[in-house]
Image (cartoon, rainbow, N blue to C red; front, side):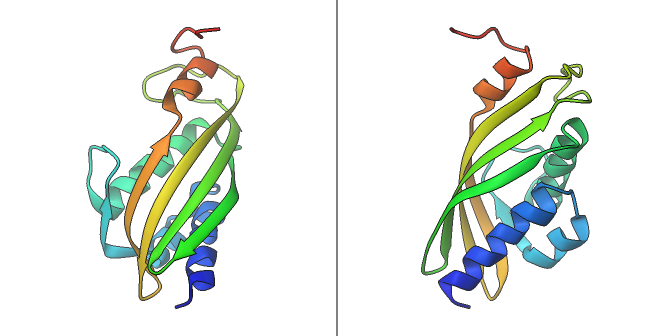
Length: 138
């Protein structure tokens, strides 16, 4: 696959899995040997699917946008902005009803048309401040 194919695959991950919670597409895009480097309770592909469902459940109108995608070799780096409204509990935090926006940076490794590895940085502090779980510093 070309670097453009790899970028398209990652964009599809955000459009259909992260934004809509489509786990059938997750199974299609993520290798069965998928390695997740975020600290999540369940490792691998199933852990990522659980994380996505938790976020989509709390923010059912979530809309992640890939603002930048850069690829070289087997790596794809994306800069994301996500927007949504917290309509249900998130990480034990009751629904706030607040519209929020947060930013993320991710690196994916793609082999033979499947995502096999992921590293990411998410502005969790900003998100938790916006839903009122942590006081804002401003």
